[in-house]
Length: 120
Image (cartoon, rainbow, N blue to C red):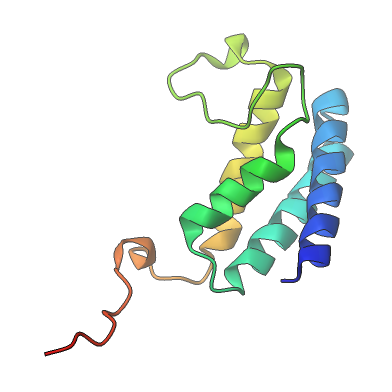
């Protein structure tokens, strides 16, 4: 991916995220899912490490949602206590993980890359 396409995808994802947080309608969530899957697919096509891809995903959403909110999964919090942006992000992140790892072996993230040639 080029920096310009990264920025374009990031802007579209952020707009879809903001709309989904504000509306929480089927149409808004469907658009968000489409952008999320497009981003995950684009990241998967690069040599970007999964951890780095998650950091970029979070960076694209930073500053969106309610004031003071940062992209994070709030494990253990009751759904009723979560603000709308956190609920939408939790859904977005599940879609992103599914799309990013689609077609990969279940343990792909656990398999270390092959070692570089080691001098004898």
